[in-house]
Image 1 (tube, helix red, strand yellow):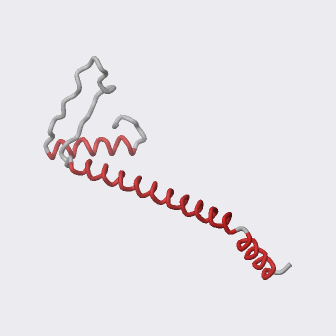
Image 2 (spheres, rainbow, N blue to C red):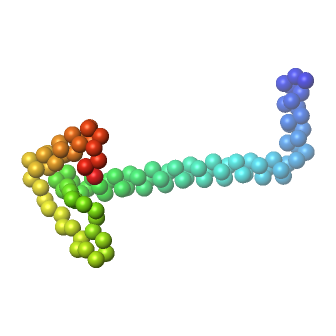
Image 3 (cartoon, rainbow, N blue to C red):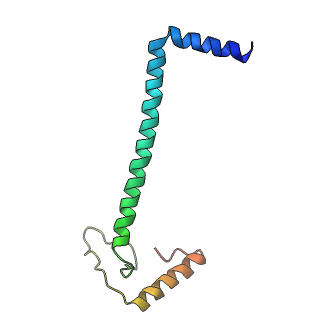
Length: 105
């Protein structure tokens, strides 16, 4: 069989089974739209979270020495650091990460 024969058979099948062809096309369209919308919502949420984190500013760093507080413990309070202190903490974290230590979280 040649390619022309395959195309003719496919066209005949589409003509004789119009409802099946329509429902198949509808399913493909709905599926593609679902994937596109899901990816778009995920990207939008990621951008919104990124913008909120950037809005906090670069001078607010929280360093905990141990596990986070539990329900019976008092929550930590944040401290504003000077620019020099911020640079010191960031450099220390960078060195820790570079040496593959997990001290900086």
